[in-house]
Length: 299
Ligand code: GLU
Image (cartoon, protein in one colour):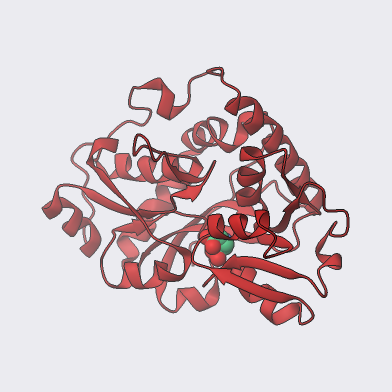
């Protein structure tokens, strides 16, 4: 089970992660070497993997590469450096770990940026082999795709301008305009459970952050783990307020019915606590905050 048991614990972890990300941005290589900065393969690439009954794995073999759907504008989780084209973050490392377990090194991964609203269709159309990008496991999404995991637990939070004194938690958003991504669970939550709040939506959270900065919206709402990354990029202008008010369990999206791949990824997570810890410690956990890997849900 996740160690993120309480809202307080989530907030504490979030605040610590923010501090750490800020110090990480200031330079310094940190200890242990992150998978990106180490330059060497951090995950052992499996050989002779046999995964019978997985149409996705058959496709990966015939393509000779793994196509992974990700986010590209969420610092700390799934982020692409525009100058180098390099991807980094917790979700990216989870994606590389899965690929390595399937027998494919990082240079055999094709990352495809796909926004929240297009995830189910990308999986259903076979545009990607799996998706790793702050993708909450929900019953309605399970009608269209399957999920391995969860591999991380967070919750919905709020990002406001640094000088905002009126919004301190979700209790203060009546009469305000909040922004979230189209097709996301936080947007649905606002629309359903906060009738006095007006919701704006864009394809991506970075567009919401721009709208916040130029005064078009009062707050951005999504998973606190995502918001912390934006605040860390611009701490003079942005801050995360309140404590998480939902539970979001991140899963790896796979083609519906590919039970063999889902089981393979779940087993990788279950048998790979040490690797999970390494992934966490080198990305979101640079704060030193201890978070336990959640148990997978073999539904
Ligand atoms: N975890 C939430 C979701 O899957 C919000 C983050 C996102 O849009 O990726 O909808």
